[in-house]
Image 1 (cartoon, rainbow, N blue to C red):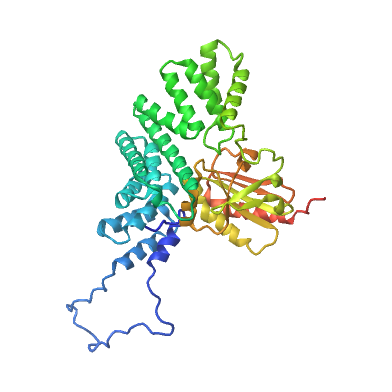
Image 2: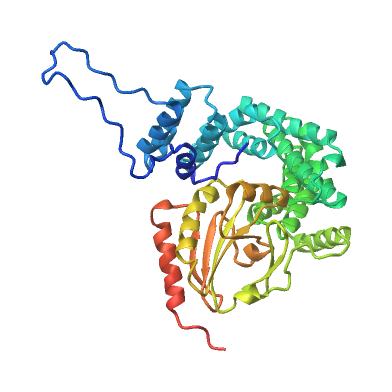
Length: 445
């Protein structure tokens, strides 16, 4: 099933439903000449020709224009009239994405679930549905999200190496499965915890952490221990989460973990004396468990041009040293971030405006914890700008919210920073910042 380009809903559906153009020079059909110059007043008027479903869908899109709320209303009215439309899956995707842009999480979750019902094997959309239902937090929705997560895990157990892509080695395939299993167990553990099933939550979170130590699982395990008044275990889990969050690409909030860790340490010991030494021991223990290898990428980088990033999907290195003296435009994003998706077409339009301009490099810098989710997402989105993994560049620039867009001038200093998604002036302000950076004199060497 085709993956709809996330924020470019109007363009996608318009392209999907446009009718064949009339042949050039072909005159429109003319009505037969009227024989009676003054037809009787009671003569019935000829009704307008009926529209095909495709024409009605096109009209629903055209009438909405750039009004996303109107597009949602029109597409829902169309589906009510044509519940078995062959375009149903694509329209559902459009409704998911448009609802996310409108910050209507409940509606987005509803249509994501409808897509899952149509394509139960679509793991990517199932993960989207799980996270949206978790965000809504309605009890029955949490139960369904838990069922979806269980279904993914059961399906993974049945998979054999015969199902792997020939482009992947057995080791790569197993590593991808391990990362996906770690992610789904983390999601299901959080769902169990929200439903009060602590034992089930602890089991899943511990397995997630065992597959790949991660700050998110450790933090939730700390919360469970704190709820159960086991302060020493809570301190251990929060300390692990704090240490691991330093290397996580935006997956955990170190400041929040620091507050939880400090609180439990004070409850256990009366003050924060000794907490620093304990954190150092935790760091050493985790580093030893990882074989002493440095966790973060580009750990020695001291300026942006020290970074070497990995292209997606082939992993080819992209050394930013080659961009020295250029204006660098970075969009830090994740696959799970609705505003990131909404920002994509605006970023792409600005990139297209400067595509023929020498001295500007646009990069989509992905910050997902689970990198296996990224290539399928990009294959569906078909972005024009170069996509790379952030590989620590987000930490260097203290990116703590998504999306974050930066413009670096020719010397590598930040000339523009935008956090979150604000549609109205984004393209104008970003383009103006790029032109300003290009107009500035190059740095002296």
